[in-house]
Image 1 (cartoon, rainbow, N blue to C red):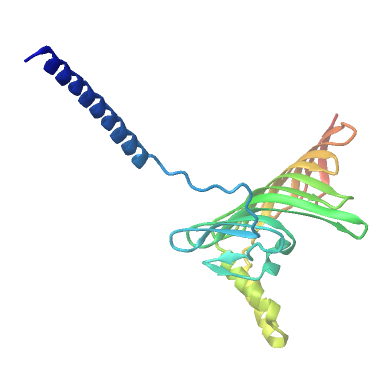
Image 2 (cartoon, helix red, strand yellow):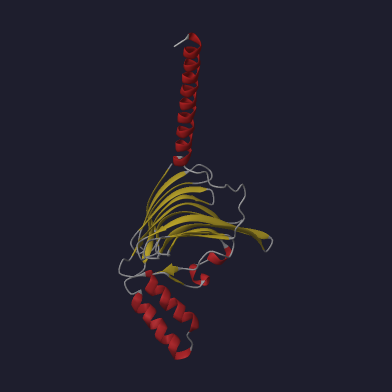
Length: 248
C-alpha cells in the first residue's frame, strides 16, 4: 500500500466518523423532541360569561360566572331557581360542588348604586355536608351600616338542605289550602331547628368585636373596642340584658 492510498483511506475514515457523529446528534435531538411535553396554544385574553368545570361523571365541580349567571341552589345534581339563594341573582363569583352534585360553598361579591347611596358586599362560605354554610368571611355595607368579619354557624345535621329547598320551592307555587299544607311540612321539617349563628369576629360600624352566641343564636358574651378606643367585656342573659360588664 503506497502513501497515496493510505492517505485516501484515512481521509474517508475521518469522514465516516463525522457522519456517524452527526447522525447520532440528529437521532438524540429527535428523540428528545418526541418525548418533550408539547406546548399548548396560549390565549392572552379570554372573555367568557360563565365557566363550568366538570367532574368525569359530568357533575359540576366549580362554576365561575358573571352577574346574573351563577347557578341557583344545587343539591343532588338538581338546580333550583336563583331566587331561593338569598341575593345570588345580583352577584358574581364562583360556586363549589362536591362529588354528589351538592353545592358546598362559594365566593360571591356585588356592589351597586341604590337610591342615592350604595349597597356592596362579598364573602366566601363553606357549607356543612347536606346543609348550609358553617364557616365564612363576609363583608356587608350599605353606606350607613358596615360589617366585615369571620362567622361560624352550628347546623342541624338531621335537616337536609335539599329537602328544605324542595319545600320552599313548593311554597312559592302553592296557594290556598295547598299553601297551608306546605307551611305545615315546613314547620315539621324545621322542628328541630336549622341551627344558629355562634361566633362573629370582626368589625361592626367601627367597633372591633368578638361575639359568642348560645345554641339558640342569642348573644351571651361580647368583647369589643369601640371607635374611641374604649375596651369592654359584657356578659348577657337569655333576654339580652347585660348582667356583668368590665370596661377600661
